[in-house]
Length: 118
Image 1 (cartoon, one colour):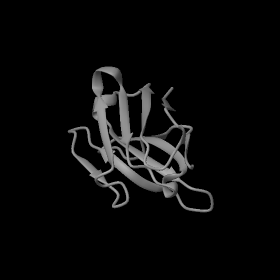
Image 2 (spheres, rainbow, N blue to C red; image 1 turned 90 degrees about the vertical axis):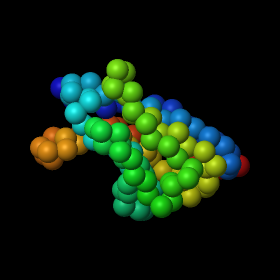
Image 3 (cartoon, rainbow, N blue to C red; image 1 turned 120 degrees about the vertical axis):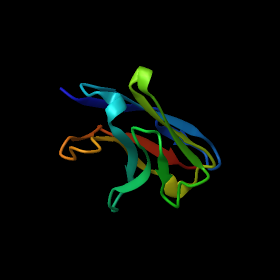
């Protein structure tokens, strides 16, 4: 059984920082591309950042320069360090695991709420 469990969300003031974590189980973590997505109320889910099994990263324009994605294969964990947070970053953040070859092996976490507000 595959599980992705996110944590680290919460309420933060504009300009603040948060670190999200996602612990994976039931998959060979090091073989998977990992990503963070977010969905704000009334909007479609969108990519924030992803990191390949080979640790190549890419970011949405909105995240570039403010967010950093990283992974620790020994801990089966992917992180999203977010800084200089803005109210428009408010959303539910979801962790995703996708096999780079067998794309139907595609898993999602339950999400963690991030609220940026004063």
